[in-house]
Length: 212
Image: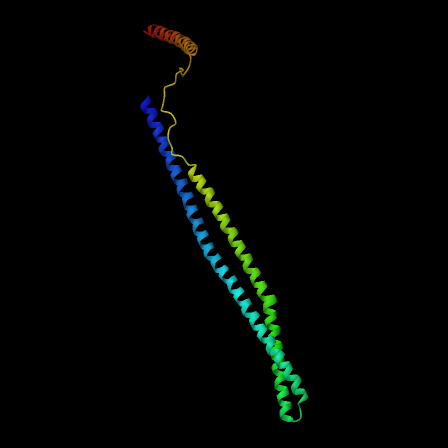
């Protein structure tokens, strides 16, 4: 009896362990996938941070370029004022036109540089910072998922019987009263059947004697 119990327990342990191994492997696979996602997100975050750094470098270059253009524009304006007062012939008039053209170019370039510095670069930086923030949030979500999976893995215990198989201290099965009652009923049914059978044999014998 105890041997049969041990065999049943071993079979249950094996089946449960097989199911646990499948679940464990699935959880480990999910952890690996999330770790790969985090690695990819970290690389993407490095790229975004580098692009933000390049924007700061570009801002510094634009600021220096604006200062230089403003200096050139101021010089062209002074030259233009001086040339206006000195226009006496066609040659000086041509010089004035060239100075005016340079002045216009510097003004257009200055407006373009300020547009990039004040509007385009901030918009570009804001967009990159939003992407970087989303990236970090995604990393946090993936990390939280990994911690949850690892907690589930840690909670999976080895399959084993808590106590060895034991024989019940209380008798099992039908009680004595039930056995006695069933015996009486079966005995009565057998007696009735036997009486009918004997009567059948008696009638059959009488018919056979009458025939002879």
